[in-house]
Length: 110
Length: 118
Image 1 (cartoon, one colour):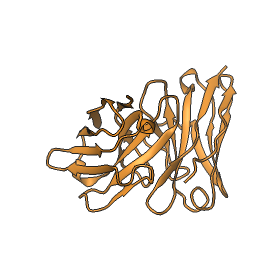
Image 2 (spheres, helix red, strand yellow):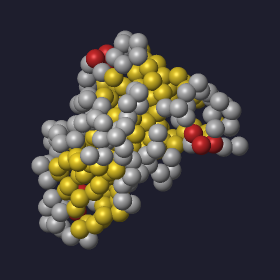
Image 3 (tube, one colour):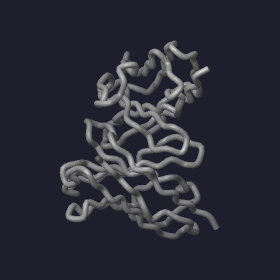
Image 4 (cartoon, chains in turn purple, yellow):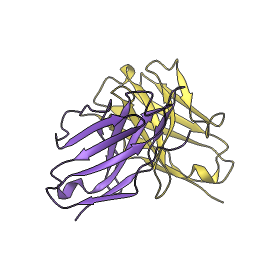
């Protein structure tokens, strides 16, 4: 199964918003409401930010939001802060008991 | 506090074997699906394997099927990954993760590095 497609980079100034896309197929993103998003700072473990397309785990700021339309999911970070600078990965259940991750997006806070 | 601590990584020659462990604490280990996810140096995340709470349901990525074996010891709150016939392309940081949300990995360990090289 091929990796989901994300833009390599995205950026914004503090206080602005940035949206990251995650494009798959009808066999993964489009077929299930099981898209999740992970934040990874350099040298650190990933952290779950969004699950089931739109849900936030406790402790994740409401500046982070998720959505999906067709085969493309999106993560929006509003009110960008310096600590949001990190790599972000989407993931989707891919059917047949497997999972697929996105290619990753490096978010830079200008 | 949920903690996952991986161990067992290291340098191994192509064709060799390694056994990774993931010690879990701070939650009822026997109640959760558990996963292995890997990340090659400078690359993205890749799902490797999953195991259900009692070990009766197991799945693997095609890239490791037939070479890797996932298992768990619920009495010791420990997850394992036996890796045989290792290839250069298996070089990666291996993370264990808890499946605490539907089709999502809610807690991750810090990872253990596996390097396959001659």
